[in-house]
Amino acid sequence: MPGGGFATAPANGVEFEAKITPIVIISCIMAATGGLMFGYDVGVSGGVTAMPDFLKKFFPVVHRRVEAGGDENNNYCKYDNQGLQLFTSSLYLAGLTATFFASYTTRTLGRRPTMLIAGLFFIVGVVLNTAAHNLAMLIAGRILLGCGVGFANQAVPLFLSEIAPTKIRGGLNILFQLNVTIGILFANLVNYGTAKISGGWGWRLSLGLAGIPALLLTVGALLVTETPNSLVERGRLDEGKAVLRRIRGTDNVELEFADLLEASRLAKEVKHPFRNLLQRRNRPQLVIAVALQIFQQCTGINAIMFYAPVLFSTLGFGNDAALYSAVVTGAVNVLSTLVSIYSVDKVGRRVLLLEAGVQMFFSQVVIAIVLGIKVTDHSKNLSKGFAILVVVMICTYVAAFAWSWGPLGWLIPSETFPLETRSAGQSVTVCVNLLFTFIIAQAFLSMLCHFKFGIFIFFSAWVLVMSLFVMFLLPETKNVPIEEMTERVWKKHWFWARFMNDHNDQAFVSGDETKKSNGKSNGFDPSTRL
Image 1 (tube, rainbow, N blue to C red):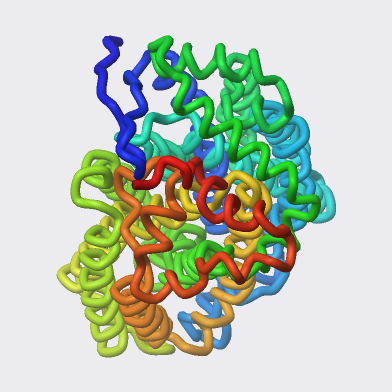
Image 2 (tube, rainbow, N blue to C red):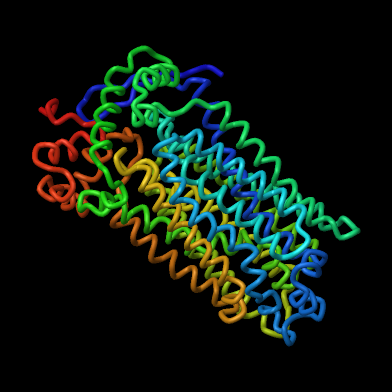
């Protein structure tokens, strides 16, 4: 794979030399397999919960209701069961808890060992799920998978942002989300095949094949190189400099290495990174990161991806047709994420988010209208034409999400925090994401039962709110070096600049170091300012 050369330009006008080296591409591909595991777990749960044999073994009440044609013939309520929702959502609750431990290991052990820990959690969780004989064993396996999700989602986006050259950081970081979408598609294809297996063990194969991405992540974590940022942060300066030369494909790394040293020095002065996150000067990054995670889940995407087969079945599609439709939406998800990889470093983050907002709002409103007219509590009067329209609109919605809120919800927080709060910031990002994923996963089938077609109106209202947030409060981070965000982004934003004044940083950093923390914590040296 040939390495193309370019230079990245920091705020002070001095350029960082960097090439697109094979080691960077390979390392990013290997690390991003953490997303493959996450995506497979998201996709597989919806498929197995639509399989009669799985429901009969673990959720007999739901199985009897589905076989009888619904809860008192109510199409929207036949899958409404807290235990069934806990099977899906327990993974995210475990991930939420694990991310706090992952923050510590990411900072003290490094990004690479944290990915290895994630892989081991995944492997043990897969074994438990595949061999499950009762609900307790099934949930225990999901909890271990959740721990893997917490560790992987903490380490992988940081790894990708730190190892990638600035000009293609967005594209390489989105490899994580691309693998999430590939994992979902892979799970949908597996579910489509295993649903046809007679003998009642198809669901075990679906859950067991999660071992493939689990092994890929574990092996990948053993093979990739640690990021220079992490090595410098842990005092391994010579090794950090050698790795920086290797991944940049040049010996001329003195300026970038000096930036890393300064960022690391300031990071070490912060004894309590989580408390430091609450400083006024860190508030913009924190608000953006938290808001993006809440908004990402309030698009309703995970509700659709978790329960796509169940949702299509509710709308009157047969079991096979429901799984087939879920495969189609999964394929759209993958292809649209490729659009994001190509365009994110060209058109920027804001353009993708705003365009997607319009597309998602329109498609959800159309779905709500069709379902409101055609699918009532006791009737599935959904003709073939309207059924196709619903699938097309869901695909339109999924496509918009896949090139916007899906990847950018992870990319933007991972590239905006300064080094001294980056690990803690990523931990909060993952925690909030998994908390709201858990809430939506636990509540969706009940919401579907009570809101009926109004569930899509609910999510479309959120899409409108988040699009306004992006328009007014989200700055553009395209082509800005990761250690230069404070000077080039936050200090120049019409609203967030007011939080960046030096005198606001006295709470945790004193005197002269306070001014340096504003100027140099992101790699900018005030002494070079003209």
